[in-house]
Length: 261
Image (tube, rainbow, N blue to C red; front, side, top):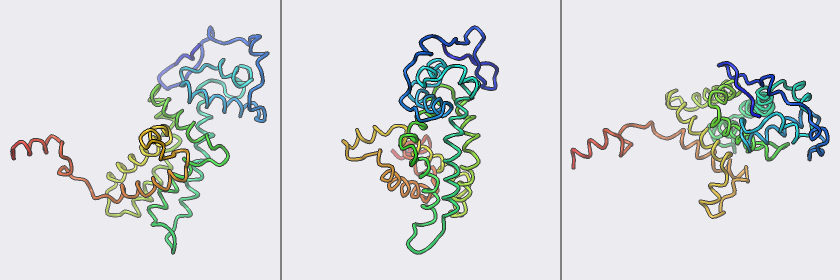
C-alpha cells in the first residue's frame, strides 16, 4: 500500500492502519542477488533501483523488504520512513559526486598542452556525473530516479536537488563568469541551464540517440559522450549574446515580416 503524505512540508509517513506486518512470505523470502552488502546498503541499492524503474509512489516499503531480503523492522530501524530512505539515496549519490566536482575544479589551470580553461571547468562539472568507477550503472540509474521523481512530485524533487546541488552549481557558475567576464551573469545562468538539460537528457534517455543514429552513436561510452558534450557546451557559453533579431518566428519578427510582405 502506498505511503500517505502528511503536512505541506513534504514529509511522508504511514498511518497506523497501513503499518505492514512481517508475513511468513517475507520471513522465507529467498536471498537477494547482492548478499555481499550490509543490510542498510542493500536496502539503499534495492530502493534506488526500484524507485528508478517503478517510481517513488509505485514502490512500497513492503516491496523493498521483499526485494532486498530484509524485514520491515530493519528499514524502520535504519531509515525510519520511505522519504528518509530517498534522502539517504541522494546523500549517498550527491556527496561523492560533488566532492569529485570540486576536486577537479581545483585542478583546473592554464598550461601547455591543456584544453582551454572553460573546457576544463565544464569537464570538471560533467565528468563526475557520467563516470562512477565503483558503480558503472549508477549514474544512469540515479538520473532516472531524479527524472521519475520530478514527474511524480515536483516539489519534493526540487527540494532535494536544491539542497544537494545548488551550492556546487553556483560555484561552477562563478568559475565560468571569471573565465567569460564579458558575458552577463543572467546569460551564464541561462547557458548553465542548457548544460544541465544536455547532461540530464543524455544520461536519462540514452536510447534516443541510438535510434536516431541507427546505432552509430553509443551513449553507453561515457568518455565518448564527454568528448562530444564538453566542446558543445563550451561553444554554447561562448556564443554571441542573443537578440530579438535572432528569432524568425518571435511575435515582433513575424509582425515585421508581415509589414515587409
